[in-house]
Image (tube, rainbow, N blue to C red):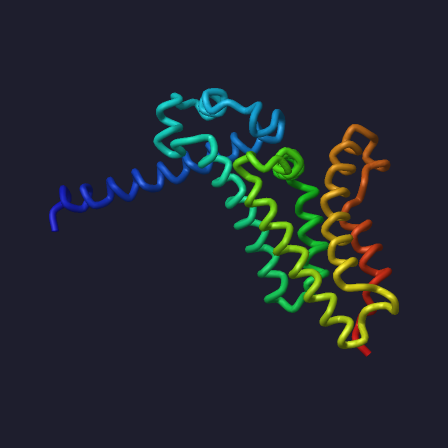
Length: 212
């Protein structure tokens, strides 16, 4: 095989890697922009400028703002679910994995900002992320409910705790803590919300561990 052939084969791979890197850069810029001004307030031209490319250059990767929003949400889920599944695979319980997820979110302010802002925006049925959030909340609540029901069957749920009610409460608590945590960042470090500690404290009120 000639050197020319080797170079020709390597060029597409380099171009693909460069394209993926630029796509990731756009996603990170969009996360910050959506977190700062919301979906409707963010401009594709402004996001392109942050990345140092032209508006048509951004459209090459994401043809519409809705497509970019979808990619941002998918990116966040991919990161969260990968870490969560790794924790479970290593032998941690679902609730331990949830607490660790919240701990990691405490190191990712832009991601928390964009999720909290979009979740509030998307209650409007004409928002492009409305179906995503409606489905995500339903799936998350059901997953937590199923785990709590399993704990109840094993005698590991405290008396009087309804798995369905507790599941909605856990999900609401996680989202509410994120909003309070964002506001608390203006305070001295010692006065800031500890999301993971508060979630763990609530779980201790409803879950009995270890199993008898």
